[in-house]
Length: 447
Figure 1 (tube, rainbow, N blue to C red):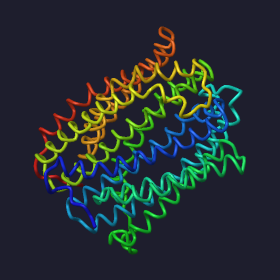
Figure 2: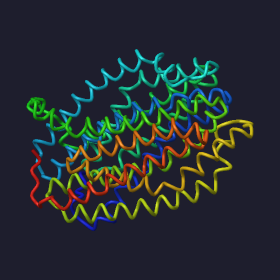
Figure 3: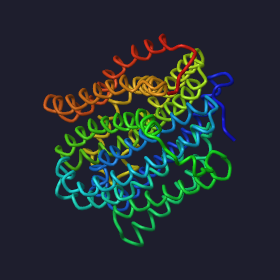
């Protein structure tokens, strides 16, 4: 059942792997889009702004979890490429243990700091309670998010990108149904949308686990597989924690942007929320290619196939560039219809804020594709310092632009923070990739 990514022409191999991941990411986006659209259409612009006002905080936690579990998956993929079954089982056991510990820690910290966080991001008083309710439920359900991302990354490390998609489609449909039930008949408001998201993700994770236990032998762990050493823990954290930290640090920059937008007013929040929700389509598609090249590089690194890694990364860059050109064209063409998807009877000011964001950010999607492709490749050969520094550059650029340009250009200045952050990270990261690829030998030591 495993898919060996060390064989075959890299371009079709990556494309076949990427398509289900893209589908999975798009359906995962349906979780938040369904929440946002149903909340906005049934409860109005204030409710939409309440969900949007905390979206960056939610993303901060989500991105850390995605980065952490992706790092665990990279380690598993390296052992898969090396055909080391014993270490593969130990890797799964280590990933499960560390994920449980991080779930407990993140849930306690995030829930206890919920009210202070609301103040730090300058949440308007008129939407404060709704925003708090939504964010607290999502934070309380952190375990479901960790569970789903862990099992998905385990399956992808084994070359199976289709199974997470199939079960995510099913749970996305369930999410939409539960949204309507919890918000309309039950009257739970924005908290109902959050409950629907958590429960649907939990269902998807459980179904993926049942499939994995049936189809993959390495998921049947024995007592000896749980004899985890300090080296097992360190080797997984060495890749997983920096990736999680890097992705969460990026969200701190987004948090600065959200705070600047929140200070402008409710209409700005609503327009910004609608635009960034659509903007997530590009982010998730690019992340799908990043997941594909990450697993591809991890397996080929484990097998010591350096030339094949170079060819695959170049092919992935070509794919992301083509995809981003198409996405950018469609996004700009369809932008007048973005706001009505989320807000019933929106006012002209909301339209203006959404349009300004899209016309500033969308033309720079190619930079995002370059950043994700080459960052994923560098991380998958075990180099964590380069992506970390690139991440810090991105953070500094995003925060300085969001907090500085807002005084010069207002809302448009906040919008320019995103492409400027991508540019700064790319300029640093590309030389790191090419330097490390030149120095790699064809024999790879996974220790």
